[in-house]
Image (tube, rainbow, N blue to C red; front, side, top):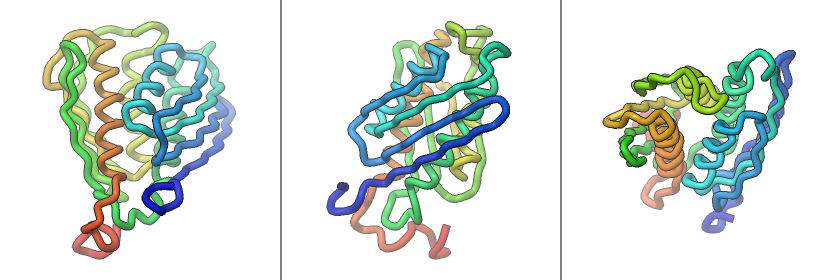
Length: 200
């Protein structure tokens, strides 16, 4: 329960010819994570997102990793976005916006989001390695693009500083977690949805 409200949970099961992704997200969790994607670095990133956003996530992803990581990572982004949208529900009483500047050693990452039901990704991370572990770095953008469209959110990620690819990527996932935690948080001053139109 969340101050007398029921927990906000999104569950998605998506199967294609390339992947099978099952995900359960609790926005009102405590940071518990059970994740298995077959991509060690990606598991590490999802675990960081879960822990630093204080969400609970159960994720099992099976994909055609004999090809590359593209389908597994992109489809996980789609499913996570859909789960966020489902869990956030009608968005009554939430802040809607979240923004954070997060340090990760040499990296300094800005993330701002708006749960506005309008998808958009602004992306400015400067990654200069092809892979971190077995994870293709070009998949960072594909993942967050898929999340933004699945969740119908504005999502902006900007690298303010940094040179280590691991730190930049990890900083982005953690910054996204903290910004999302802000955006889905309740504010007792908000009646209905936070919009001059009265609807999102």
